[in-house]
Amino acid sequence: MSALTIDFGEDRVVATMSRPEVRNAIDAEMINEFHALCAELEAEPRILIIVGADGIFASGADIGQLRERRRDDALRGVNSTLFSRIARLPMPVIAAIDGYALGGGAELALAADFRLGTPRIKVGQPETGLGIMAAAGALWRLREVVGEPLAKEILFTGRILNAEEALAAGFVTALHDDVLAAAHELADRIAKQDPLAVRLSKQVFAMPASAHPFVDNIAQAICFESDAKFDRMQAFLDRKKNK
Image (cartoon, rainbow, N blue to C red):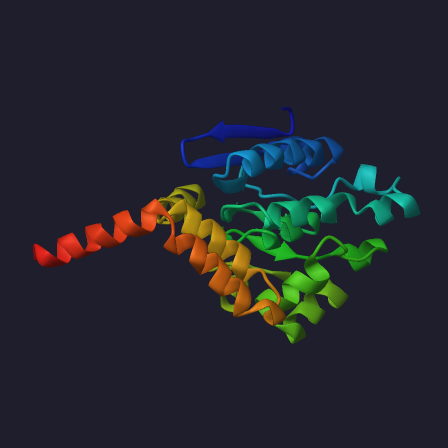
């Protein structure tokens, strides 16, 4: 891979966007490499941590390539298809944000389950200033994350949030000087849980309201028959008895 640097661990994968000469702008090659990584994580589920090289998450889509895209490219949903695939990965996704997360970079972060930042982050959707829309998820994910009034301001005026504003709005849940270390700490906490229970919880969480509580019951039935449920509950009872 040339646009991504991938580090595989036993329970997690770290994907580093590495195009520092263009502030890690998301180009076609990076899209293809993310798709290849998603295929691996769909086949062998692990936690995914996404980070950017050289103190920048991603400054957006590669404008040089974006300028040449036409109607059929938009209808294919080049970025939105990938970001939806990342959002649907079996195990949680953590965006470790430093520096700029703008345009497609912000939309990639919005596709993650968790977003952590540094005190240096700048996040926003400047697409309307370039004559296009934020069409890779921000038009609906951003409202869910920060609320409708602020989402409209970001989307319609190009407002860029600094770190404290992003934290107050809920775009990120915490600020850390070493955001990658914080992402690994979060991944450690996830990894201590039962992987099947985490996977099913993520899938059921994403279901529409009309699917509940029926899908909850079905997913819980699967958990109830797993070996991990019996082993973990017995270990809990044993610890309680030995106190």
